[in-house]
Amino acid sequence: IRYLTAGESHGDGLVGIIEGIPSNLFLDAEFINGELKRRQRGYGRSNRMALEKDLVKVLSGIDRGYTTGNPISFMIENRGKNIELIEITRPRPGHGDLTGTLKYNLKGGRNVLERASARETAMRVALGATCKLLLKEFNIQIYSHIIQIGDVKISEEVYSNIKEMDLLKVDESPIRVLDKDKEKEIIEMIDKTKEKGDTLGGIIEVIAKNVPIGLGSYTHWDRKIDGKIAYGIMSIPGVKGVEFGLGFDACGKLGSQMHDEIFYDGQRYYRKTNNAGGIEAGVTNGEDIVIRAVMKPIPTLKKPLRTVDIETKEETVAQFERSDVCAVPSASIVAENILAYILANEMTLKFGGDSIEEMKDNFNNYNKLIENR
Ligand code: EPS
Image 1 (tube, protein in one colour):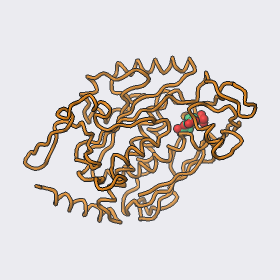
Image 2 (cartoon, rainbow, N blue to C red):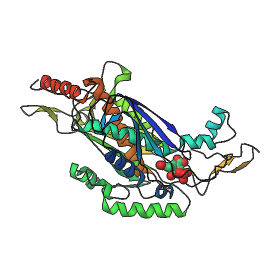
Image 3 (tube, rainbow, N blue to C red):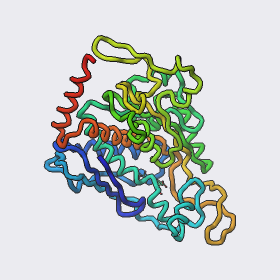
């Protein structure tokens, strides 16, 4: 499966093409629109989100609601296009304004902003939601929640007791946090940060359940599934780091404390811990895939940082335009849908098939093959 997006933040809209989705999959537009809506929520977003009502228009690749095997194309219209598009000559530190202006030999950062903006992730969510629909056919579920915003982290007690039931309810929280006490604290912090003209980042956790054993490969570096996932997650605007399972905390452990011992229940192998985050040697091991990503604070600041005017070369402060105070909850929905793409792609690589029926047959045969091994 591969996809491509085009479109600018304040242009007519976004377009996307996805190919490689097998035929005869019900392309549930309501589900895709639901995912777009989830991405638009989140306490701390700008008023642009009240303006946008992201809805996907399917231009090709389906017949009577089902995929045909032809490339699927989508369009999402921008409502927030009627703003005055002022040139960016005072580049924002942390944004692509300066590097993009120099790299493409532009007058300023306007057309950099237009494409580097996280607006593009709306289309990647629509494309990823299509992949989620494919994964659902194999009972693979993807969840996410926020474990930290700014310096406020959810409590260890809440974190270590999270069940699948809780993950189903994350959307009830305006910041997608499962710790009620910390939720209140974070919302207050977002308000205070907004008053100060500043911004906040955070840490996202994404979990995939019911992933079959054997996606990815240990045979070549570029087929390792953790590498592919990291690549996808790092491509989310603002993400500066990604970790799997115990991640960076692994360094504090001895080998005997780190590795997930193997047990057998009479039918299948299982682990009592999941420090590996569901991946060993670049291959899924059947446990949950658990990844965390850190998103830096948004670089558009109402109380701007120092910069240089690219026309006068004088020291000044960065340009400000409407922006978000905190977009971590939205980024978590983007991360879910990017992981969905990576996993759906791996599923098609392993199980092939041009139709969903063929793919399921291959999947069932594989399960039979590894059963009782
Ligand atoms: C963004 C700036 C804001 C955000 C935008 C990302 O847009 P605007 O400049 O129009 O106020 O709301 O996010 C989206 C439009 C979106 O759909 O997520 C930026 O500079 O990255």
